[in-house]
Amino acid sequence: MNKDEKFLIGAVGALLTGLAIGLLVAPKNGKETRKLLKDKAGDLGGTAKDKYEQSLDELTALAEKLKEGFVKNVNNVKEKATSVADNVNDKVRNVANNNA
Image 1: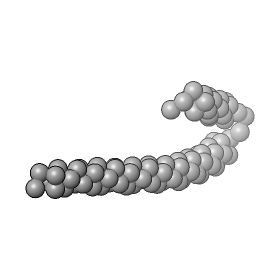
Image 2: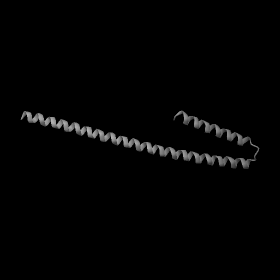
Image 3: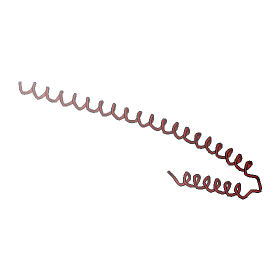
Image 4: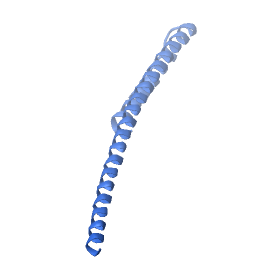
């Protein structure tokens, strides 16, 4: 988690704490205050769900990039191994032909 994300989480937490304190000392009756708290909690839940889905999408994209890089590296290793094996095979044949 980078500094910007930590700051954002702290700022949101401070905002919510301030809202909760403000609502608790506000001159509204209990029913209105509870409704307001319920609405704010619903909004927060929706925001958290959106952030979760966004993070999941980003992680899926990152996993796909990692997979592509891994497959590319495996293919490169296969090509190099095949090239080395062919080179060794040619050298062995040359030595065998020269000694025959």
